[in-house]
Length: 201
Image (cartoon, rainbow, N blue to C red; front, side):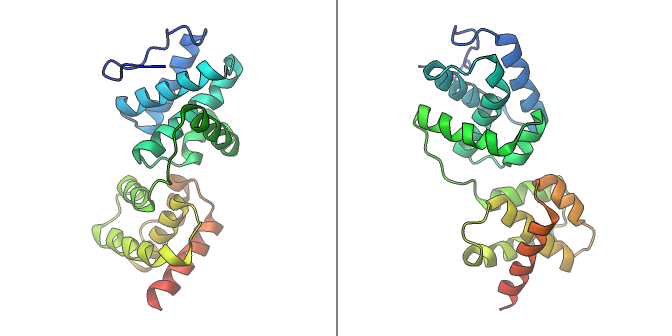
C-alpha cells in the first residue's frame, strides 16, 4: 500500500473498521513516549500495511499498534525499550516483540538493534545526569562492547550508567535507572560489575 508520508497515513483508508479506537491507541503511545509525528506516521503506515495483508481485528490493536511503533523506532534508531512501549498499554513485551517480528516480515522491513549509545543518551537526559558521570558511563559502555556481546543494548546502557553513577556522583539511584530502562536491578548490577572489571582490566 502506498501512503503519502508528507500528509501522514490515513486510518480512514478502509483497511480497519474501528478507526477511532486505533487513533486513540496511537495518540496515547505518542504522548507517553514523546514520539514525533514522523515516527508515528511511519508506525501507522507499518500497521496499515501489515493489517492489509493479515487483518488483526479490533482485539489485536492493543498489540499490533505498539509493535508497529517499536518497529518504527528500530528503523529510525529512536531509543524506546520494548518494556517502555509495552507499559503504555499494559501489555506483555514478549508478545509485542513477537508481533513486531511478524509485522517486519509482512512489510519487508529488516532492522538492526538500536545502538546502546542512543539508550545511554536518553537515560542520562531523563535523569539529568552530570556530564562527568555521563562521560564515564560512555567509557564503561565501550568496555562492555566485547564482554557482553548479545546483551540487550538498553541493558548495556543501564548497566554502564549504574557503574558510572556508583563510582561517580552517587546521586543517580539504581532504582531510577531501573525505572527509565525497564530493566531489573539484578541485571543492571551484573552488567555494571562486568563494566567495572573490563574497564579496569
